Length: 395
DNA sequence: TCTGGGGTCCTAGGACCC
DNA sequence: TCTGGGGTCCTAGGACCC
Image (cartoon, rainbow, N blue to C red; front, side):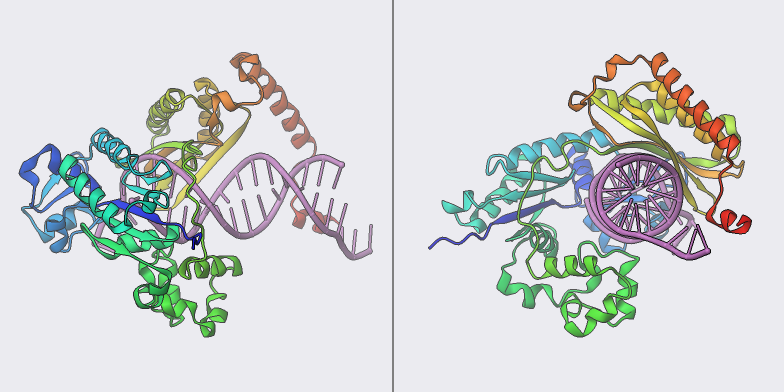
């Protein structure tokens, strides 16, 4: 008898950045250290803490100075993205030996459809083999969750860390998933969890109780509620789409300044540099974008995004720069800011463009856009923008 | 606990079109 | 004078994740 229950693995590399750092520098092995921070600024945070550092109460997103206050002898290692990318590649290539249906959840986690592989070998044995193999070949520890949906596999891999293997069958949901605190649920973050707590929903099991539905609907839409419920009860997706994150939907660059700045020229210079690196990536990955924008964060941590959508998708640097300069001039209020960013949205592969964007040179493009802008400006000058309030007043 | 950097997805309102 | 309805695109912000 054959059923159609899938066997999904979620493989999570434990303390990945820290693991990579310890591979490169074996001195770090078994020591309390963190990846992150910065030597030039006091504004750095912990990106990843080694398990020894975690035992001391140091965790990611923690301010580096606070971490040092807890443990002054803490070793800090700078972030080295190319190193992580290298081991990430090795990791995904290793997994490919077992299945070709892989979703790269992030740099250090994979969802894998192991249904076929499980026909000839027990899933637990496959998991053990993968875990031991990654350790032996690359010194990369991982935790593996095995379940029938992506969500349950993800929750399962989280249950035992580091080096855990957890099977979460549908019939185990009540015993293994329901007792977990609601804040441990994937998708429930630091904003939603206090609200749920306040409603008396403390565990994942609580969330499924009929009596809490009405209450839950006061803080979330019916749709969100149903989606969470389906996830918990094993009714959510078991389909792994390897292409899902293959093409980025946006590309961005941002930086927290070493000190707050309020000089437009100096800020614009940084924006230009950020745009250059962002644009480099766009070109390197053979992408084009249609929307370009900037991000500004003030000293109160208030963040604004301002963007413009161009007439066509493009990878033309000057088109982006033009837009970004205008946006900045129109939106910067001379208040000191702590962060600037640049982003490109509506990103697609250049070769997937329906219209050949090469038909228009930059000059032609800007000329066209200039004329459109002029038209709009004329109309606006002639008929000033009226809000609905304005209309009511005059009527 | 004075809060990085790179993303995805969702929502909501307004403009505009038919 | 009082107010359609659906669809799509754009902008902005927010929540969340690693």
